[in-house]
Amino acid sequence: MELWDLYDINRNKIGKTIQRDELLSPGEYHLVVHVCLFNSQGEMLIQQRQPFKKGWSNLWDISCGGSATMGDTSQSAISRELQEELGITYDFNEIRPNFTINFTNGFDDYYLIDLDMDLNDLTLQYEEVQKVKWASKEEILNMIKTGEFIPFYDSLIHLIFDSRNQYGSVRLKMDVAK
Image (cartoon, helix red, strand yellow):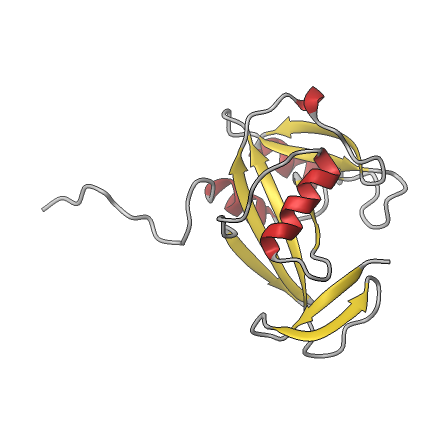
């Protein structure tokens, strides 16, 4: 049984939990986390969901994600999800999400990490992931068009790739012409 902490609109815990798949009341929100892993060639690790997985069965997805469970912070949730789904241990304790996307029932934190790895060294969680591979932005956008990938907005995929190695929305110039 998976329990979720609930939050108010300002992302404050409200001291209430629900079971996964229970309906949230108006003004209640939950936390979701995603991590996008990139190799030194600028490709993102993507995973194919199991055919028996509820929701988006057999489709390709970004590297890793899931719901925060009771007691989780955003950082502990993404660390747990990454370990469970791909067998990767990574310390997120001093890392803030690169951005958060609000959706109807909650907040979705996105972490963007550069991490070269041999895909053969990963331990895929049988209940969630059937296979993984590296893919370019163009490959992912094409997979969305052909229905092989979860139908994320193209603009989200562009944002993910364009936001690597940075925080914020303003390009800061180090050398300003006088």
